[in-house]
Length: 264
Ligand SMILES: [Zn+2]
Image 1 (cartoon, rainbow, N blue to C red):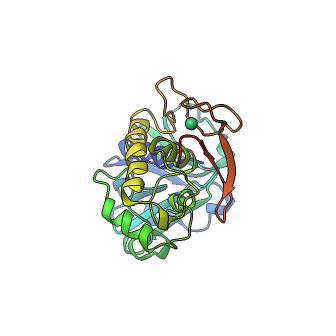
Image 2 (image 1 turned 90 degrees about the vertical axis):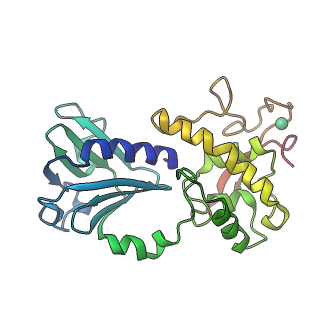
Image 3 (image 1 turned 180 degrees about the vertical axis):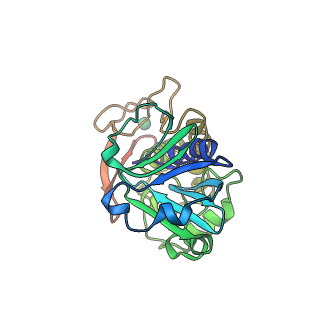
């Protein structure tokens, strides 16, 4: 699943291609994205800005209209020079925005909607999003307040994935962050100190920022470019030799990887 770093990088590229540029065409070829009259509603409008918040991407047009997308497991944003071959089949395109120089394409949905700016502020799902781990100034206090208002019996690894607590982090960074901070992801929130929570965030944030600089999805946490625990179940820990463990966690049963030797 694309995590926040991938979306921030996509927002950057889409922004360079669209902001202030003449839009020469908008198409919604996929059956599920047709019917909203987007080409008519967006005709003649300029893109003012493109933003990411966590795993959500917003393309803001003149006149109070915003395209909101969330890629979930399957979606992808592509930015191609005019005439360059797209890396996914055109049949999978849900949205195409053309300028004189670029095709900006959203493939495979699955969340793609055109809404007013005010709705993006008041929409319950969006308004509930926690602070973005990749925001220029990460709001630690807001993050801690949200975690402390969450169920104190909830396990840390599960709580970190809840975008209402912290936006942008996903399964890979969650597992690696808990390892780097030496914190057991199975501990309940009531038993985890603020300093430990911030140690996880503090370990992951610079790595995610570096990933954005490297094109997003640049997931590596060790010097040699590999990972400490993610997808290494049954292999010896690089640090202490204990076998890495893996188990589904939380209501969504997302797999958490950890070293019982290094993480307490
Ligand atoms: Zn270890």
